[in-house]
Length: 117
Image (cartoon, rainbow, N blue to C red):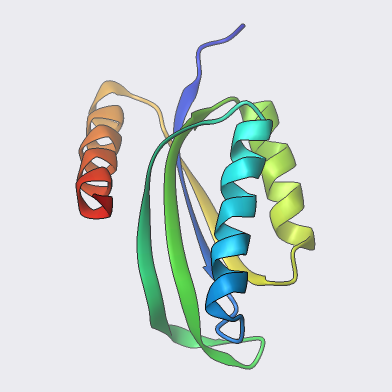
């Protein structure tokens, strides 16, 4: 098995979801990452924020970041699921590859974990 790569995914949920629906969507994404071979290091709940520009008539969105290790094949499946999820209005994956990038990933992941506790 190949060594897991370091990733960050940030996604924005529709602001029209209830608190319970938002939590359920976040839990679904975490489960999706784990189901596809990902190991979650930490999460950063950024809450509801104003969008830089309107997306699908939404002026706000609920921002959430997950730092995880995974394999490229798993990323493709997670991204496919993101695309068909109508509650997700935007997403991004960032891959950290060299030692310097991985050091940054580790620092951000550690800071997110501290905030969560």
